[in-house]
Length: 442
Image (cartoon, rainbow, N blue to C red; front, side):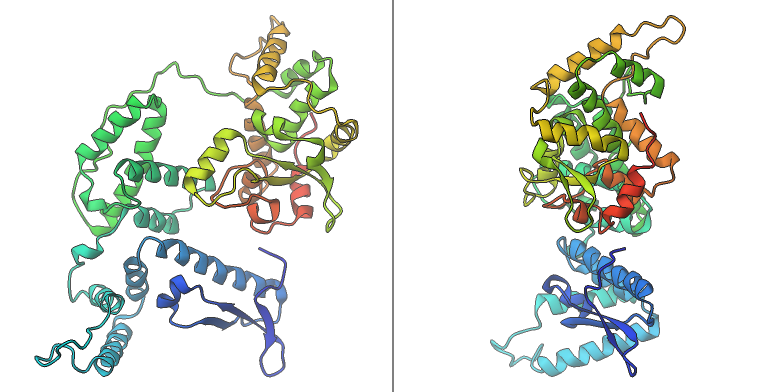
C-alpha cells in the first residue's frame, strides 16, 4: 500500500470522507463508461482510504493490461457478474440508445447512412452471450494471453510464476508469428513444432519442460472456462530431464564463512557479503560502482543501486520492448553489517579487484576447493549463485512478505524502470530496511 494521498480528497457534507478521483485511461473508457472515477471510500480514516484507493488503481491497471489484447472478454466478464434481470434491463436500454442513434439501421432505404460501429456491436454481443441468448462468436474466441491474464486473476501465483508464464506465452506466440493466438486453434502439431524449434535452439530439456508445463496450465484453464473436452496439445510429449541434473544448494553459513576466511583481499570478501545481504547475482554484484552507494535524501537511509545482469536485462527487454534496460535499476537499503564495508569501497574508489565475473567465479571456486574437511565435506552443489537461494530462504524464515522480499532480491517484473519506489510498488525504504536487517549476520 502506498502512503501518499494521490487521487484522494476530502468531500462530503462535513468534508470528512475521503473520495478517490482519477481520470479513466482512454483504453478502458469503453468499460467504465465515464471519464473520471469519483468514488467515496466510505471512511475518514486515511489508512483505510488508501487501501480502497489502491484496490481501485489495481483494478484499473488490470483492465488496462487486459484491454491490450481485446475488449470482448473484459465486457463479457463484467456482464456475466451482473444479475440476470439487471443485465436484461441494461441491454434493453442499450438497444434503445442504438435505435435512437441509428433509427435507419436495417431499413431498406438506409442507403449510405452508417450502421452501429464494431465497438457498439461487440458490446451488444457480449451482453447476449452473457445472457445465453447466443453462443460465443468465432470472431471473439478466447486468445492465449487473455486466458493467461484471467488465470492470474483467479490463482494466487507468486510474481516469479507469473513472470514464467508470460515468458512461455511470449515465446510460443513469437514462434507462431503472432502477438496473441486463439486458443482453440492451437493444435498438437504446433506444440510438436515448437518443441522441435526449441531443441534446435539448444534449449535444455529441463527448460523446454518448464515452458510446456506453463502453457499446459494456461490451456487447461481455458478448457475449464470454455467447457471444452479437447486433449491438451502441450501434454504428453515425453520430454525427459536428466536425473543427474544438478541444482544449486543453499550454503551452510559455516562453510561460506570458511571460504570468506580464505580470501586475502577485502574487496573479494565484499563480493560475497554483497550477495548475502542483497540476493544479487554475480553479474549484478560486479555492476556496482562507488557512485551507486549513496544516502537517500528523503529517508536518510543508505541504499545501493543494482543494475540487472545481462540475462535479466535481455529478459526484461523481451517482455517489454519499451523497457530502458541500460538504465534499469533496483535500489535496495543497505544492511547494517554491510554499510561500513560499502562506505569504505565508495571512499577508496578502486572498484573491484577482479575485472570480469568469470574471473571472480573461477577464483571463488578455487577458494572453495581449498577448504578440506574430511568430516564435513564441502558440497559440490555450492556455488556463488547458491547465496541467492540462502537470501530467499532467510527472508522466508524471517517471515518477510514475499511482495517485499521478491523485489529486494530482484525477481523481475515488466516495467521500464526498476527503482525501488516503482519496483516494490510503493514499499517505503524504512520498511524495506527493516526487512533487510532481518537477514542473519554472515
